[in-house]
Image 1 (tube, rainbow, N blue to C red):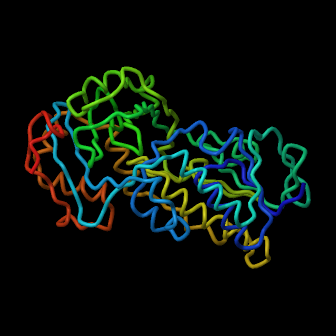
Image 2: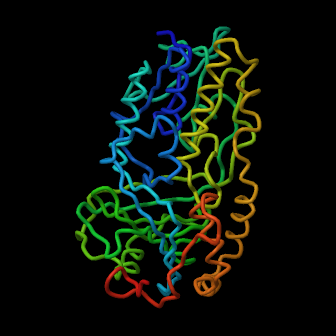
Image 3: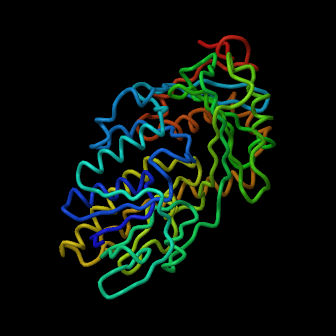
Length: 378
C-alpha cells in the first residue's frame, strides 16, 4: 500500500499531524498497536482552555468535556489556597471519547487508520520508507510516545528524563469541591512533581507523578489517605488505572531527519515543569503535518526549514525544572501558601498568559482541609 505520509502512533500529536496533511490533499495512513482509539490511556486527559480554541477542536461535543474553573494548591499539611482567573478554566474529558471523536474527524478528511498494528520494521529506499514490509510512504512521522521506536530506528534523539505517573479512576466517585483541580505539593509523596485529584467526566481521578530517577512509581494509596478529607464518595477499589512516563527534559536536539520527523512526546514537546503536553501535541502536531504536506507538494525545501525554530524552547520552564528538582522543600511550600508573591507566580503557571497576575484571585489563607470542599472558602 502506498501513502504520501505514514504516522506511527494515533496520539493527540499523531492524529493532528495526519489530519492536517490529509486536508492538504495527501494520502495519509496512521498505524497504532492499540486495538481501537481510546484504549490503553496513559494521560489524565485534563486540557487547558487553549485546546478548545484550536480551530477544528471547537466543534468537540460538549458532552465529552467538563469545565473546571479553579485550582486548589495544597502544602503537605493541607494548608492551601484556591485560585481562579476570570474567564479561564480547565477541561476534564471523557478521554477515550475524545480520542474516538478525533479519529472520526481525521477519517472524514481521508486519513486511513490501521489498529492493532505495531511498528515492526523500517527500511529506507529511494522513494521514502518501507514500513512493516507492507507500506511504502514518502514521508514518516513518529508520534509513538516517549520511548519512540521511530526515533531509535531512524537515529534521532531519545528522551532520557522522565516523570513516572500513576492515576486511579473511581467511577461515580465525588469530591466535596468538584469545581477545582486539587494539587498537592509534597516532596515525600511526589518528589519532583505533585499529586492531584479532580472530578472528571463521570469519574473521580486521583493520581501523582514523581521524578523517575528518584525511584519507584508514586504511592497512590498514601495519596488517597492524604487527600481523604477532600473526597465525599468513592469505591474501595478503582474502576481503572492510567500510567505512563512523561518526558520532562524539553524538546530533543534532533527531531528531524531525511524524510522523517518526531512529534508530541516522541519529540519531547512537553512542558518540563508542568508536564503539560496535550495542547502542544495538538498544536505542533498540526504544524508538523502542514510542513510535511508542503514538502510533499514541492512547496518547501524540507519540513525542517518550516519547523526549525517553531518547536518551543521551554527555556524558563527548563530552568525552573532544574531548580525544583534540586531545591524542592516542604517548608518552602508551606511558606508559599501564605505568600502573595508565590501565589501570583503559581497562578501565572496554571492560568498561562491569558491572566495577568492581578487577575488571579486567591481565596483567603486557610488551614488544613475540613468538611465541605475541604476548605474555609470565600
